[in-house]
Length: 252
Image (cartoon, rainbow, N blue to C red; front, top):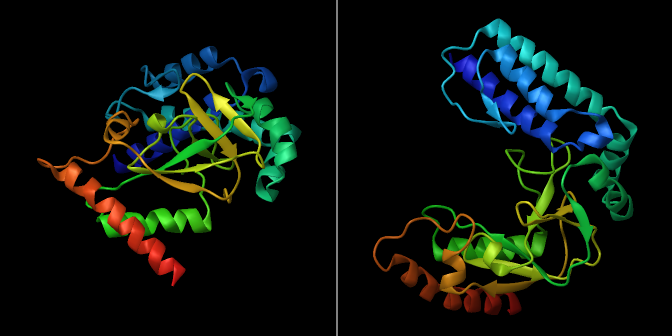
C-alpha cells in the first residue's frame, strides 16, 4: 500500500504540472483529460487537477499504471516542445529577456507586469528561535532567494520553478520580508491567486529588510506557527534587538 500511496503522490504532482501548462500552446483539453484520468482510476480522485482523496485502498495497480502512462505521455510531449526547451535553457542561464518572452507561452494564467517594489516573505518554521530566524533572514538577503520547491503550486513544473513574491506586504509569509526593485528581472503575475513570480535559479538583488506589523502578520497567507499566550508578542519584541545585533556584527 505504501508503494501505491507514493505513486499517487507523484501522480498528483504530474497532474498539477500538466494543469500548469498553457492549454492553448500545447493543445491540452484539460477538462477532458482530467475526466479521462479519473475514469481510468475508477473514481474522481482529481477535481480541477488537485487531489480530493488521500485514501487509496480502492486503486487497482493496473489502473494506476495506465494513469501514470497517460500523464507521462502528456508531460513528455510538453517538455520536448521547442518552446518549453527554449524556456528551460533560458531559465537555467538566467536569460531574463527570453524568460520574459516565453514564460506565459509555456505556463497558464500568468501575465508580464512591471511593478515597483515587491516583497518576499521569510517563512518562520515551528520552534525557530529569534536568533536563528534573523540569521536565516540575513543569509537569504546576502546569498539570494531560491525558487520554491516543486509541489502543488501554480505556473511551474519540476524543472522550471519561480520565486514567489507579492505586491503587498500583507500577502507575504512570515514576520519579516525582503523588499526590492525587480527591474532587472522579468516579472509575472497570476491574478487568480494574487502571486508575483520571477523565474530564476536564484534571485540576487539589493533588498531591504522590513519588519511586518502584527496585523500584517495575522493577515499573511499562512500566518505563523501557533504561539501560546503572548508568545507572538514576546517573539516580536525580540526581533528589533536581534536585527540590530546582527547589523552591528556585520559592520565589525
